[in-house]
Image (cartoon, rainbow, N blue to C red):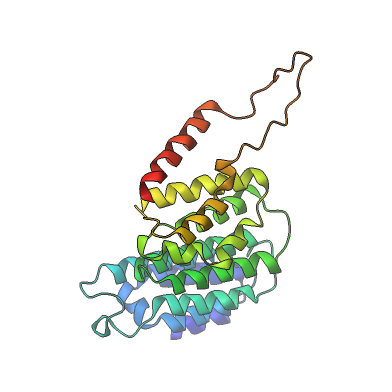
Length: 266
C-alpha cells in the first residue's frame, strides 16, 4: 500500500511508469493475484500521458500463465476467489473512459482487447460469453474512437476476429455473435479478404468442426471474399489481356489449399 501511495503522489508521468513497472517486476505472481484490485485501481489513477498497454499486457500474460499452471482449474473454488478476467475487463472499461491521447492510442487499447481475448480463451476455454464481452468492447472502441484504421490497428482487428474462432467448443457460438460480424464492417474489401483467410486458418489450427447448416452458412458469409471472384481492376490492352496480374499466384494457391482443407471440417 505504501508503494502504491508513492506512485500516485508522484507528479512525473515517466516516474509513475517506472515505479509501476518496478512494482510489477519485483513482487511474485501470487502477490499480484491477491492484490490485483489495488494494483489496477492505481493504474487507473496514473497520469494520462502514461501508456499502460505494455505494463498491463505483461501483467495479464504473467497472471494468466500463473493461473493456468495451477493444478486446479482456475474457476474452481480451491483455485482462489480472484476472477482475473473480470478484474482486467472492468479496468479496461475505465481506460476506455479516459480522454484520447497520442500515448493511450486506439491501437494500444485494441492491443489490450486482444490480450484480454487470449486470456479469456486460456482461463475459460469454451466460454463464448467471455469472448462476446471482449468482442463487444472492441466494437465499442472502434465506434467511439473513429478514424481511418492504420496498418497496426487493422492487424490487431484481424487477430481478434481470428483468435475468437480457435476453440471448437465456442466457435459455433462466436460465428452467431453480431459483434464478431460487426468487426468486419470496419475493414475494406482488401482486408476483408485477409480476415477471411485468417478465420479459415484459425478454424484449421483449432481443429474446429462445423456441425450444423446454420453455422456453415454464417461462416460462408464471412469468408465470401475467398469464395467469390471479385474481378480485375487492372488495365487491359487492346488484345484484351491483363497487363498486370491481380493476385499473387503463390498466395492464391495457399488460400485454395486452406479452403480445400476446411471442407473436411464440415
